[in-house]
Length: 145
Image (cartoon, rainbow, N blue to C red; front, side, top):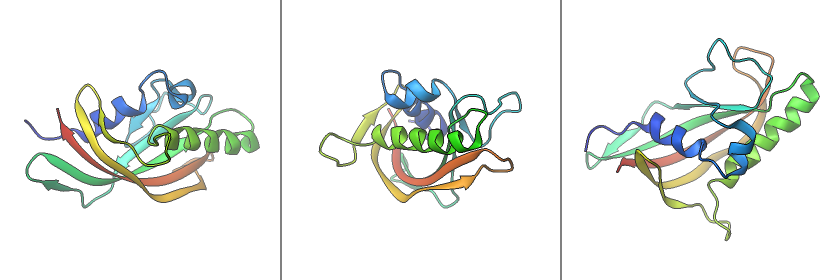
């Protein structure tokens, strides 16, 4: 097993088809920043690992991920609601029917062993722009397959 590529594993999880999140963002999940050629027309998420993630037993990454959910659209007020919709769909992909967080979520490149929301989503102006967004932090334990 090589070094865990958390960006790849998380992007695969966030863009899994047949989820409410996929219906909103499709493949628009970006690590670190929004590409220059992307505008605020469509919903998307941006995620980045916060400093301090640790490698457990050489194969498991234990880290906090900052997620920013953008709703898209031209009306700023509607973007606020749409951003909240993206955030709620994001939370839904992590939850079981019982309300507990999922564990052992398998993607093509790895396994999310555990996940939990660290900070509840809050409406914020987008990073360096005027797009309203919902920002949250999640803790993951991720390993390669």
